[in-house]
Length: 199
Ligand code: SF4
Ligand code: SF4
Figure (tube, rainbow, N blue to C red):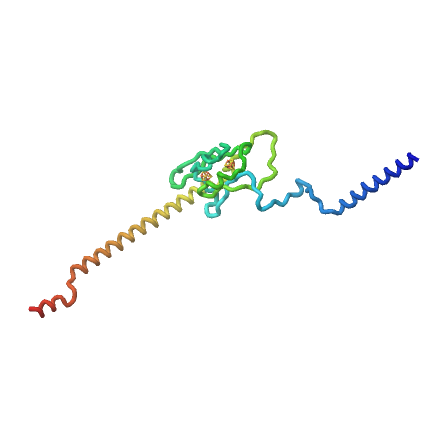
């Protein structure tokens, strides 16, 4: 009797388990076949910082002002750079971030005066060691010579326009002064007649 009860109990457990399996089989899966399937990230998702490209510049706009370096609570940003020969705009020549230390707090993004820093949407960075120092300029180096050449032209054009405006303003001022002087020298119409009439 005990034997039969045991078999019946086992059978019931089997059917219950199969029932759960069949029920779950037709539900929408909650897992992904990563890496063949990629997750859909929330718009609010944020990850390691990156330098962004501006269409009008064709590259990033880090001017090596060091504000991000100074505000970073993790001391994980290293930047070098400064004035570049031939152009006024300063440029970063080295931009490294140790992401093993970065807390993705975003203070560097908030403080950047040129808004060239932004959160990336990376989610699957992996490695075999603890070296997480990234060169954020790596993807921009090839564009730098072209950017500098264009910037030289832009700055030369701006300087020429400023000079032309200055000259035009000086000419207009001189013309106005000459007109004023001429007006002061010319007696007002009717002055002579009035004097003659009084005599
Ligand atoms: S996100 Fe925060 S911790 Fe990371 S580099 Fe920027 S300021 Fe530093
Ligand atoms: S704050 Fe912005 S412009 Fe200044 S060094 Fe950092 S990334 Fe470059």
